[in-house]
Length: 125
Image (cartoon, rainbow, N blue to C red):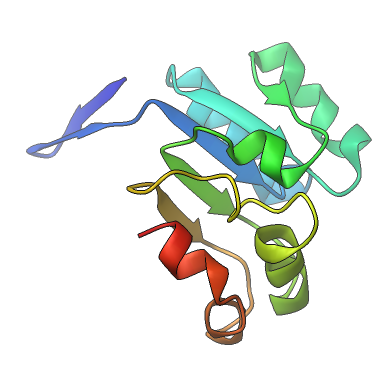
């Protein structure tokens, strides 16, 4: 999918939205899907993300399942510990993404989340 606006073109094929069950995550994932982007969502409490299925979003059981093959991995989580667990933990996203993927870290976590997740930058560069 190519997004065009304000003089730029950006090709986005798939977005993994990790933390898609909260107020902001639900709305953002829904809007991305509404724009025609392939969205795979994951939330710690799956039931909170399941309403997104009505909008064409695939709801995954693990962060890794959502992130596999994604062009963009977007994290919208509660804190640094959650980001680290979702990226580098068992079934984490960093272990399955391909080179060239972009990580959009939107959690309220400060720089600790990135610096404490040593596999993420190299896996997603």
